[in-house]
Image (cartoon, rainbow, N blue to C red; front, top):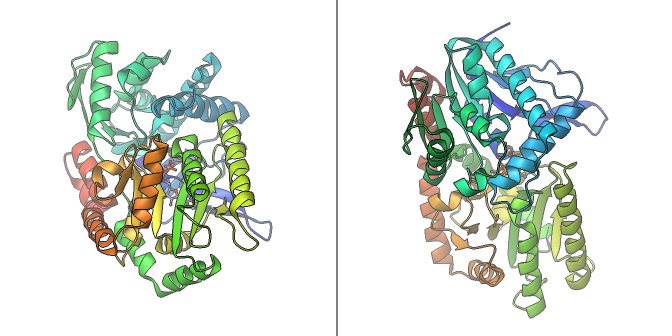
Length: 471
Ligand code: ADP
Ligand code: F6P
């Protein structure tokens, strides 16, 4: 077994199997913020990525991807249902997102969560060389740091949560709250998107585990666990270069023509998830059509909503409701060849996404709650022309870093409508000034800066940081 000095452990591998037009199986980059964040970083690093390849068959042997070794962890049908769809995505996910849907609790799910976390810990222990740095990602794997430390105390272990970490009164509802906190404290460094999340974690550790905790350090078993905020970002330069490519600019012009050359294009790009505020946004748009503030001939909405977690009941219900509403709005306000909403559920390659960003006069990113939201950052990076207005929810982590966006509270329908109108009709000089400021921020605070700050805090020798972030 080949071993690596850096091991990333995430529920999903950065590639997914899909069926090519000729029926053959092909591998493509998985959609989702975690992969978007880490994939560019690890290219050409001597690292191993431990994760699930997406199916329920035996773990496939995958080739290296851009120099990164793939170590697959298999999930069977029961694991998929009880760990991934159950505990991760029907207990933790809704709870961590303000309980916008009701979290469900089943003892069987907890057993599966432990079992799968143990499998990930064992796979990681096999591929990590002595003294390696291991970086565990996200809420599917809260127990891995503790389990891994029990097998391999020589490792330097980091944990990073990509989603919000809830306030104590919500987290306290979890029947297994103490075990989850203890699992995370197996790490040397626990990172969050926001300082508020680190504060919530410290409060919970003090209350539930009765350990000495500040917002920066926690003492446990004679060790110090550091905690802190490390807002994740994107490969800004890569997105900017892609968006500036002549073929992408030409594709954007073509897309605009295909949309009927409207005066305004509003774009939203989401996973089909109830946290993303898709229904609220459709309602706001529909009410603006009813009141006549927006006319289909001048303004079109392009909603990209790639299906996600499709066997989880709450996601099935959401998709049905969204599709019914899109159908209703198009039926009521569209004309032949002129739909009010262009609704797309396909995954796109990065160049097509960049072209879509370039065509959007208003990018509406209005989640009810989101750890960060990388789509918002990708849009800003793609606007190399300094044009385009970002309409952004106050409840996305990105809002803390991009205060120049047109900020809205997506729970406030009237406010959302006002925000849409304001961003649609903003003076070009205002739009440019805001976009320029946001681009400058992302130029500095990109994915390498994120990795540098996290890994520097984790691996104080600095050796890894230099190797990973110098490219
Ligand atoms: P989340 O992590 O909840 O999925 P983010 O906005 O942080 O949300 O990240 C979503 C990522 O998935 C972005 O990098 C975005 O470009 C990508 N993505 C979203 N929709 C698509 C799609 N239809 N095709 C390809 N990539 C997509
Ligand atoms: O950021 C939250 C997250 O769960 C990521 O881990 C992942 O990139 C994304 O959402 C997509 O979710 P899934 O892996 O369930 O398709």
